[in-house]
Amino acid sequence: MEGSSVLKGGEKTGLLLIVEGNGDVKAIVDFIMGRISAYTGEIVCLSDLAANAASAHYNRLCTPAAINFEKGDVKAPEKVLPVPGKA
Image 1 (cartoon, rainbow, N blue to C red):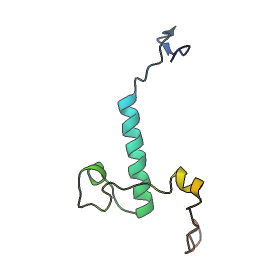
Image 2 (cartoon, rainbow, N blue to C red):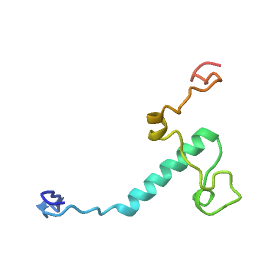
Image 3 (cartoon, rainbow, N blue to C red):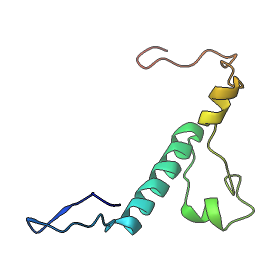
Image 4 (tube, helix red, strand yellow):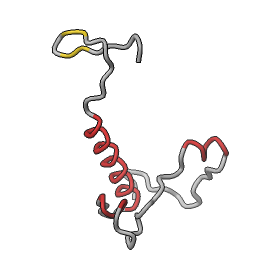
């Protein structure tokens, strides 16, 4: 990006670099696995999402997505959601 700069070792480099790309991808995948695990109560592994076709989580989409809200497709759940601290 022209005009963008980052500091590297205290010096302005004049370049915008994404150094942590691989770590960022791993963090996003960890977040997705954590979200699915939190919603389903199951242990979710990367192989369940990407390689194990027999897994219920294989090629799973995290929904609702932004487009669902924009289209108005998102409906409130019919059942009462649990409230922390109440039985």
